[in-house]
Amino acid sequence: MGSLLEAEERLLVEEEPLLEDVSPYTGDGSIDIKGHPILKHRTGNWRACFFILGTECCERLAYYGIAKNLVTYLTRRLHEGNVFAARNVTTWQGTCYLTPLIGAILADSYWGKYWTIAAFSTIYFVGMTILTLSASLPALKPPICAGSVCPEASLAQQIIFFLGLYMIALAAGGIKPCVSSFGADQFDDTDPLERTRKGSFFNWFYLAINIGAFISGTILVYVQDNYGWGIGFGIPTVFMAMAIGSFFIGSKIYRFQKPGGSPIIRVCQVVVAAVRKWSLDLPHDSSLLYELPGKTSAIEGSRKLEHTSELEFLDKAAIVCTDDAKYGNFSHPWRLCTVTQVEELKILVRMFPIWATSILFSAVYAQNSSMFIEQGMVLNKRVGSFDIPPASLSTFDVISVIIWVPIYDRVLVPIARKFTGRERGFSELQRIGIGLFLSILAMIAAALVEIKRLEIAEAEGLIHEKVVVPMSILWQIPQYAFVGAGEVFTCIGQVEFFYDESPDAMRSLCSAFALLTVSLGSYLSSFILTMVSAFTTRGGEPGWIPDNLNEGHLDRFFWLIAGLSLLNLLVFIYCAMRYKCKRAS
Image (cartoon, rainbow, N blue to C red; front, top):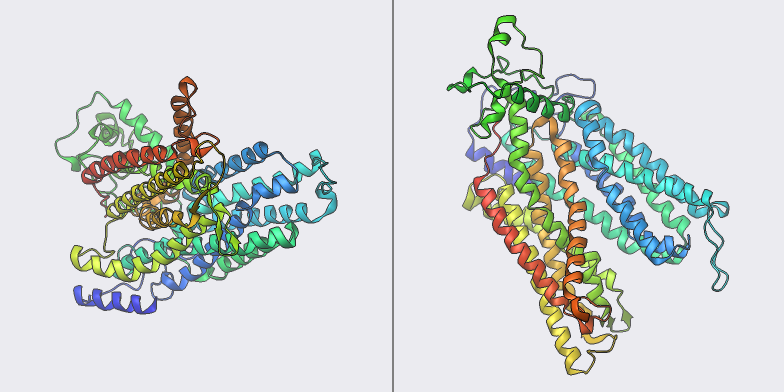
């Protein structure tokens, strides 16, 4: 990575004339842990991000160390039924992607990102410890099965286990929206060189996530299945402790942004003030709208935002009416808002279509743990002398990410930079669009594999038999690889987009909304499956996805998702072409 940074530095030095009077302090208003202005050359940048990347890798290893094999633990050790265990797992995972809203609001409103991460990391470690004790101490888990008799866990045992589990869900949600934005805060937006490095940070951040996921999905799952759940949960607990240690080590060199107060309250203030002044006419000169003089923003820790001509109704919240001017009543935000506060809400409205078109990508990603596995179960899993579990092929998704991140950062970005002139090679919206296109290719690959599988089933006379078809499961690798490549473009591009385009004092909240698309994508996938089942099983037909897939048409389901993804891509392109970027001063 060092050679890449040196090349970037040389490039930017050639392109930008050196300024004789360069401030030793950051230009984005960041401060140190004690609240003092911060020196550029001693803080932030990659020197601080290495600790943050280490924290994220260890935390994700801990999270996936629980999530990857949770359903197995619930069925084998807590003796839950398959349906009940599956419901518990999906409910828990859904909670993990809803709780980021809690962490984001606390970070942006009151605590700041650093203290939010610190507080929820502590909760995380306590939850992991409770889970480990629950799996280790005989009194906290039910006895093992005696033949076919499996004693149920007592109420107390269930309470202790799920207390630890949901403490992890709360803490993971509290940490997740803050870590990426806190890492990006280590780069000064007003410095061209640091802006370029910030783009690289998002790539390496996502790589750290997938390294943690890869280790959990291979080594930790093996340990849990072969050496016991006590040590299997104990190892990720140790890694969570390492994550906390890594985070605190860098405290003195971190750059901090002040929390700006509740973003939800500020949004409501704009709406209320605009409605109150709905009958007033907007001035022809936008400079007459209310804003604080100078460079100081009314919102703590935020730069001023320039006025835009869209959504003019909201501008009425910044009209200085006769009563405001007469009595000097400029301190009542429910009656009069600054232009910057109004522009915050406009930005959220402009970002919404981009956010909405990311949900279908998450629905495609959800096939990794659902229909791709169902398809793999009716393919030949024997490779040499080994039987490959269908779920283990999702590792190729992770491997694809691990391979593609360095290729993107070291190869594609420098090439694209020569053609586009952009510091990061591609814009965030271009990057998201490429990933959406790759997700279509993933669905097409899955459909083609299924078409070939059904042809073999028909040729072998296996249509009405619920058996494996003589076609290697390795044919699924391309669809997993396309999903992984799509993640590198869309998921990382989405994180970049929501960080760069969000208002300064709403970055954690916008990151939480980005994470919410994962949860909504899973719900959308379930809804589509329900509709497909309802419409294709009418009249006694087996439907597209029957219990015996040899009688069905899973390929049509994949084509349906591909078609919806294509329409979604076209909508995204339309919205992206009309999108106007944030302008801060």
